[in-house]
Image (cartoon, rainbow, N blue to C red; front, side, top):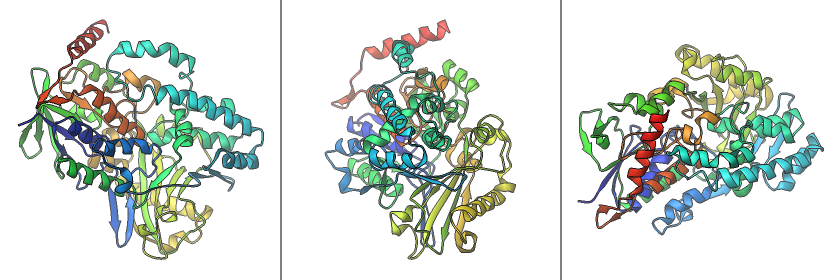
Length: 513
């Protein structure tokens, strides 16, 4: 029998890791507690209405193409990706709209309507974003950061890029119009960060979108998950759903398998976790490594998410595929969400209308929707059991009064998810939507490492690990682990002598700290 790897969690990070590890020659078993593959990318279907539960935006298709190419296959033979235009429509409190996407000329024409002086500012923003992208994404995103010396060696370059600045500071350096400042600074919220304190390294998203565009999988993100599931089956990966891993088994400082909630124990030569690292280190190990304990103690978590799913018995053809709907407040609302832990009566929304591109998401003549509101995580003490219905009503009322007339009369198949659901279904600590927040002190070496801090043969992927949340981030986390796991030769693992050196370096760093 060959070497065996167990992957815990079938989100995109876990799926990508399973495929990459299988390609190295391991027997791979993928376990997940959900009834479907995809982690947070579950699919809900109700009476002809389909809803992608989680991510809907695809911005780096080559990351998926790489997974299929591992097996000499093509992504396009499994799922169709189509470009969107606009990528996003921003709706501002005064009722004005800004369509973002298409060519640079398209965007400049839209900027001209708002603020002609910001044309050059936008070009300068994209140029600076490209510089950050070339370092932060192309060079560093798939680099292991478990050694502090790696981080120290990059400090001069990071300083030269000005990554100590926030996304808001970078955007407002180039853009003057207040509505456009909001539009071009909102991207950190898509990965769990507050634009006013998220390191501007995440501004690389501007160039990432400009380089590959914003795409949509026909059939939804669920169709992409299904395609990856087919690929895993063809590759010989074993998949076991509706299965909860209770803890990681360890012997003499090394992971040796997992214990399931039904008492069964499964042995493995290595374990890859796509579990929220905060949950993994606080609940699933007999001993939490010292560095992990320090990170848990100091952790600042992302916001929570309230997601309202519904159908309409009529179509709203003038509503774009993706709409960012801004409420009156911006900075102060984000303070309420991230720092005051206060659920305010006002909100901003991400509104998803997949039927704008794919009519199969709803019955004929109907639309499928979700409206997502960033909210405080469960550290706020919010009792979602008592207020969720009312909160959803307020969202429908706001949408009806601004861009969807007659909405409440035609709503059908309505349901919601709250931070409580994220905690219970996905084991997300405090119900955080994106694990720990992407602030500077929780990036690179300071984020949870992709190779476990102190436990051999245990690896981590997903939103809470380097490089971070969002589909490009979690899939790239699997590339980091791919660099750390050595391929098998004749069923035996090729050991790299640097492994022992790396662990000794980590031990010495702990002693210094």
